[in-house]
Amino acid sequence: MAICRRYAGEELITSEFNMLELAYALTRDYGEEKAVEILRIVRAFIAIVQLRDEDYARASTLRFELRSRVETSPS
Image 1 (cartoon, rainbow, N blue to C red):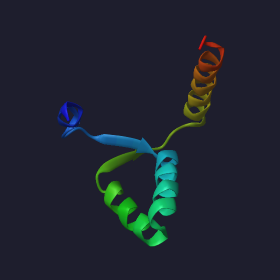
Image 2 (image 1 turned 45 degrees about the vertical axis):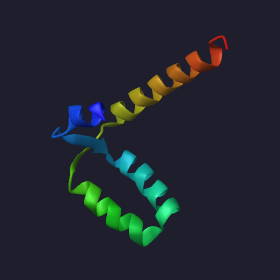
Image 3 (image 1 turned 60 degrees about the vertical axis):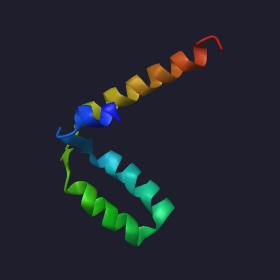
Image 4 (image 1 turned 90 degrees about the vertical axis):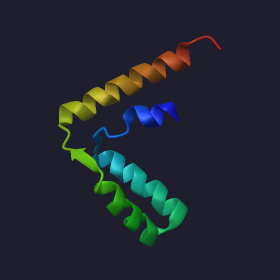
């Protein structure tokens, strides 16, 4: 719970891509109507940033690098 208090009151920022992932999970778990209801509530409390193509490419590069480290690390 200390983590929750640490970030209480901070601005929440995400991208449309993350909203899509959230929408998918909510629809899967609760159905389309409930998912829309929850998404509207979430949008009221977050800032959605418009990412550039370079941001998506850089994030993909980082993901590849991290995956490579996991796959090549000794078990």
